[in-house]
Image 1: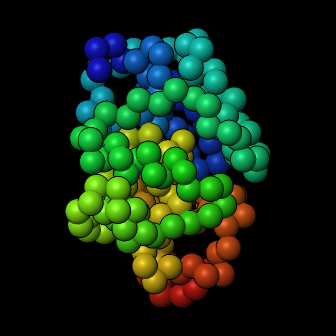
Image 2: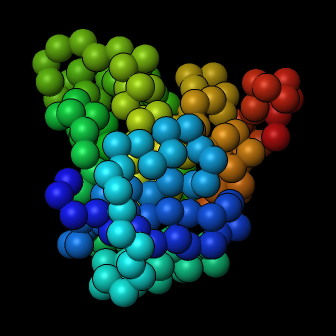
Image 3: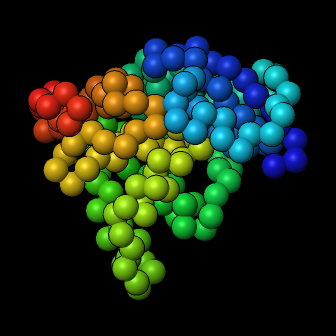
Length: 178
């Protein structure tokens, strides 16, 4: 990433920091999340980039409970394996969830070799473009809400906003169904 621009966006889940190379979104973090602004060079604050205006419009619609189509240019930086996982995350429908194991099976089929769910979990956890690349839609094999860098409460908030079937899910840290 040569040039890096940032913009802050206040949201119901906390202050979001977006990053861009000037053309594409390269990062989106919830303030205080794990790996916050990971690998982000010295940014230049800038809110007037067209891609930031598009992202803000998308986020506004999303937080109003709509399911906006993903048309934003995204350029997450990561290994080919991580990018393949993030590509699968983009295909998870709004309001739906999948498991780390299901993603691993899809990758195994495509690659013709075994991929473990833990490797998928590592890639999901290091997703640099939270919310836009919906890593919050991935749950454990037993429907447990685990592994969200933004925190389980925010994962619950995002899935609830999307109208996900929360009665099937549970938070292990709480020990109860939702």
